[in-house]
Image (cartoon, rainbow, N blue to C red; front, side, top):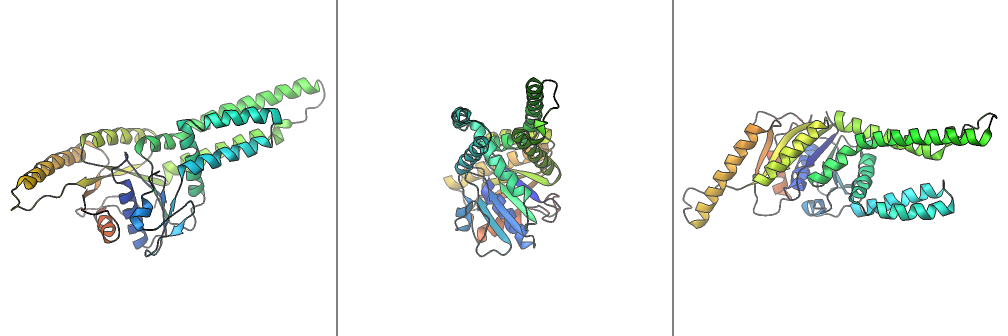
Length: 327
């Protein structure tokens, strides 16, 4: 049974609804479940009618279900302050001022968002108790893919930095001591220790994402969403991440046979188009369609959330295999 389940997809396709529904069905199946929102829109509070923050909090009215919302802006700020504190203890005052300037500039770049969010993301994964299942309502596809590609990229980067740091220490010792016995500065070097900690962190993340996680992509029955999802499946698969299923959300309900007005004709044409696209998805994607969910008139919450949960053909015990039952 995997411990971590991720629902991704482009912005606006309904990830929050689907991830919330899956978290609900996991808790109803007896799994102590945590729902984690990393989406800046923070729609989880709207779904459950309750405010959440950076710490897990029980969802009122649902036994065995907790939720938390990670604030990306606050994570970037906390990440910056943590780096400043660490460097302030290791560098001279003159260097600290210059480093502060460089860090401020670096944290204005798009990558800072993913790096800071990734750190919080890993914190949750490294300390999963007391939860049997942690469900992530991830950010839109582009950000998610950059986030999930960080472990391999940063492991290689850190290896190079450690090599350069060890070489610089070795050269400094040789220059400073001449023929005397070296002081073995590398053994207690705080920067090397920090790099080793970071490498271990990224190694854990890569291992957990590949061995103990399942990924589902949420999409709408339109050309842009299909194209975006196809790219996402390819990218995740290339990274050896386990894409176990697709959720096609917001299908148009078919009108009653006696509805023959303009609205009825429009709906029938739209339904026909969407059914063609659904067939295309089922025929051309490797991951199976684990749910085809119709649009609701109202926002999905309460009893409607339970209805959506019932439509997800995901084996909760494994969070992976599709069942033979109809959607």
